[in-house]
Image 1 (cartoon, rainbow, N blue to C red):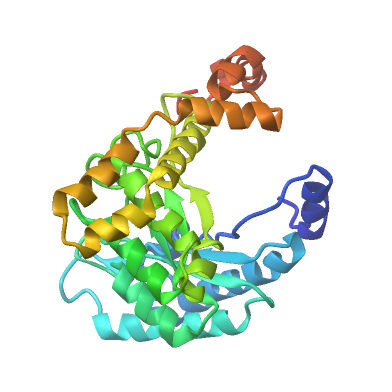
Image 2: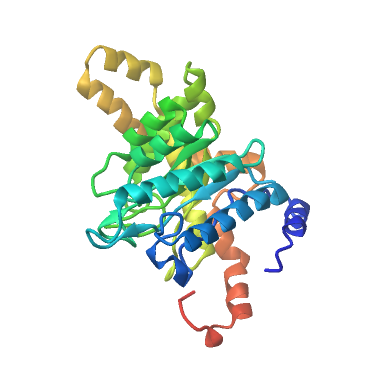
Length: 325
């Protein structure tokens, strides 16, 4: 709160914590009601740009290598603004941000097809983010939020495409039933999560240098909203779900799968995938945790720690102004 990010970076280092992506906030202030970088008001554009450039400076102070950009910008009604003009504003300002990235830093461009805008969104899909990343340069990549797609979109295919192009930068993991629900990742559609990790695991061992290096340098983030289930336990569940999905992806017999695919053996190839998904990898993960000296059941360990009761008592539920814990 005091703006001393040098001290913050030092404190994190002392605690053994590495700070991940820096996320500018250009959507909550009243000034941004018509957009930030896409706003028709040059003053608002400048305000948003200044904040994002400040975040580039913060990256250096906290030793972060990723600038994660999500914009709420869009319009609610046809004719509200010039769609091409908004596109050009974004391209101009993102180029300025790109030029201010610290050495080795990456710009991760997130997209969302609707909400909070309902007629048009300025970065509505992965294709827009990808096109802008290509224009900006190799340090610009696409960030995939699992909840930011229309119903039925094949997210794992998007992941495969961006991997192959070397432009997959990171994920915001969550799960949804309807829109951007921000539920525990893997809670609603664990098969989708597994198929995403299948693409990633395949990429990690690819003979293609671009694919392999991209897959091995993904920024994994959890972007969820927990209101009725506590705060810490859902995060642990999320990590465990990702670990299980990744472990199942490693079970896939890739040489057999490639042979079946090349031979056009549709059901044989599909069965190899579904067999891996149905494998119970929990005993394996328990063994790995035991070898690492960590609790074999993270959820049980958290429940037994008493930490949740401790933070509830310290917070004081009677004085809470809103929300649930």
